[in-house]
Length: 286
Image (cartoon, rainbow, N blue to C red):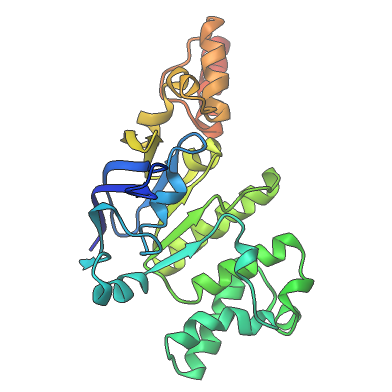
């Protein structure tokens, strides 16, 4: 069953003179195993939206259901929340225990799993995020590098086997190689756990590479949603919204203006390379 968001509206400080409606009549579905990317300019409601998906925030009106569990209902919320793993923008802030092993074990232990299953999940989670179990298990999380802290926080979520993995800017502050490593980890989680992913990101390249569906938020509403090809094929429209299109889409747009006969719908580096190779090959044949 999916996550279903229906006519969700959220107002901060409702009823006060400072009331601000951050989300207005938002509706969408996250299907099993699907990768949904959420993009939009700063302040458009992205972080507010994803915190509704596991009941950290509750709608002012409308509702969210997770596999049929109504997150507005206190009794059902705990069951729905157990299916949703949330990783915040700076996940290293989620660390708190005295060793990496204990930190990763916190979620599975709260699920009251047998010790053997907890140990197995910790080993698997550490492998998936690229942390050597012998080297890191007994280390304090606070002695780790920034990248290692991020991996530890991700491992703690993955060890709970979430059906839905929700990530708020997981690549924030990382260089291109770091972003690539995190994306590869997320894709590994999907393959191993079969989980759906909902990811907020300012990096259009990361979303273009991995998402099945892209939701564009604008001023608290869904401005547009569709496949990456549908969203990123119009680089100019994204530019007008203050969003930088994927690198390949920007380059393709500039080349078309210079008279290079590139097809539409180019938004990944691989597609751009293939298109340019085809043009070069065609010229050589001529």
